[in-house]
Length: 252
Image 1 (tube, one colour):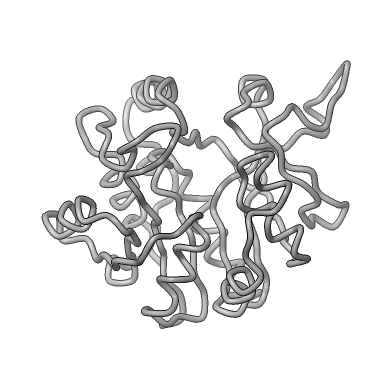
Image 2: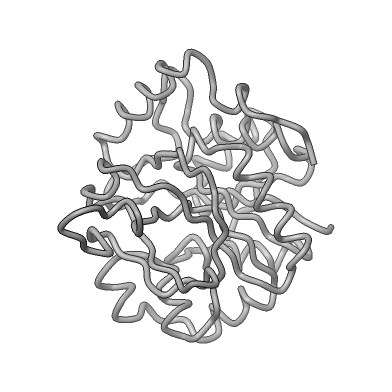
């Protein structure tokens, strides 16, 4: 296959155990994410990757393709294990805790991966004041050409005045190929920055894997901790309907 979407999911998250199957407005979060992806991509090329039988059973119940992996310390590590079983030229990682991911952003990532299949890329987006001050949300610093320099949960870059000119939020959609995944795992160890920040992409930076960024709308909100559930539900209610139905949802 040329490209596949992979949704990594696990029940043992430290900050919010059982997160994939937590209900958002009455529907399991993982189902929200999968349905969102089907709006822009062939469902035959969309997979959930997990080590948990509970998630496997849930996916089977709803007709979602699922691949069971062994234990993985990070989502990228899980996608590497997935790539050993499902071969593709490009792996599009849409996190299982992004029930309001912007579909315009997802489509842009898919197109970028087709054009630059050998690059590792993540999204960068507008950083609201709320995200900037929230230590559960990752902020990124990039070079002038868009290469990722660092990713932190702190309010970076620090500014006494107008941080909005420079601050960017991480949009956790990745695109990468098998070679990058193999290199990531071959040299894998939770590096100092990863241990400090709890952000897996910093492992790639410390092991000198170049990571590119592309500009995205970035109006997503990941469910990292319990308080995020209410925030996401309010965002969905405020929209009046699912955001991906408002934005162009042309399948690729």
